[in-house]
Length: 481
Image (cartoon, rainbow, N blue to C red; front, side, top):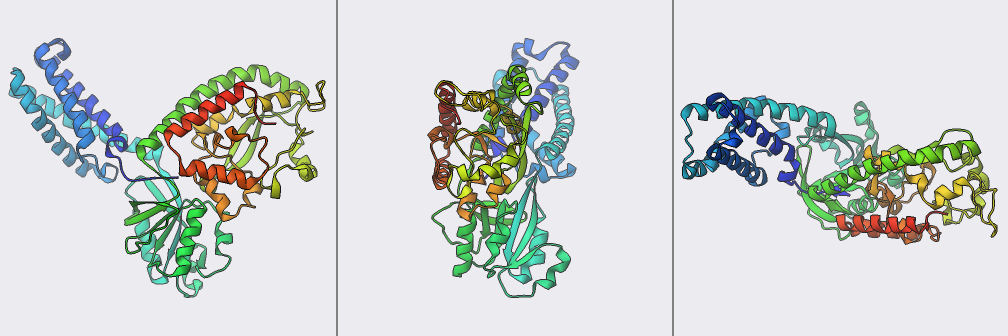
């Protein structure tokens, strides 16, 4: 999943909010100094404050004043604030004249001075906070000819978007000796290497950048392979090939303008909606988790002394490793015993592990009248209560409420390129596979098919539908076996 294009109104929404608050504060200070009161209690001057509010919302939506704000230095920011102030007054002047507001020259100067001074400080502070909180690192494989390698590394490093692109491997499109690039301290391969995909597939890769003409068949095939693996592909504007299996958009990568191919391009509005839903759901889920802990923790500890929470390394978006949390539903030696039970695995090829009546589950030796296990571990798995601690992963940004199931490290090592596409999005607590009868699905290729269906048809509404169906399934106690 890759975000497409720029949505100025949302991308710089925080700057718009700061400008609005600063202008209202400037009006309050001006009125208090010159007239001794609160501006909102004066019908005429209150209209001025409201006019500024409407004008700033409009400028925030349609003006390009904020474009490039993150890459501007202090001098450039001050220049844009001066231009913004001029635009704002030109927009509000007709309202001031029509309303016949008794506005003096001193009041005009005070508002302007207060606004420019406070807004300059507010914008600079906001950019520092943004840099700390939202800075991202994306891992890039560079595919180009040997003469372009060093220049490309420099240009890709000139990111102006708040994202750092870290080159993790270089693939040469010509036959030059790779020893010429030892000083780069990066793995260098040839695109004609028959084992190239095997060497790259287990690494954390977010993007592949083709800086070369790609009319030749083997490079076109390589692009298709990357897209199939769920890796976002960029290539230089000189390469205009179309690939039916991907969505296309024009974006920036470092200092390059590129055409982007990805299995799914997501607009900033849609990405903001999904992340907002994750944060709200994560906070609510953790509150429920805290209540569940009071009851579940003693039951687990009495039956199987040890940690209440189970941590396991899983593969996240584009191969990034993270620790996933659960309420522990298995005995402490569960991982060691897994190898002994592989023969009873219901999923073909060992790409996942599922079995009936798993003896590793806490209390599974206790049976009901039908001979089915009824221990505490079976209960919390059947009701999906063991999944609740994953809301912490959601808040941390490692998982989403809705996504694909995160594989274990050993499962990931067995993935073919087309399996990898599952992890082009953040893994989810629930997903289309979970609401499609997960306990009955024993063919991993069917899981992959369902996940690709989710990727190709994703919308915010689809996530809402999946969440609703998940709640219905849990309430019916039709959870995992």
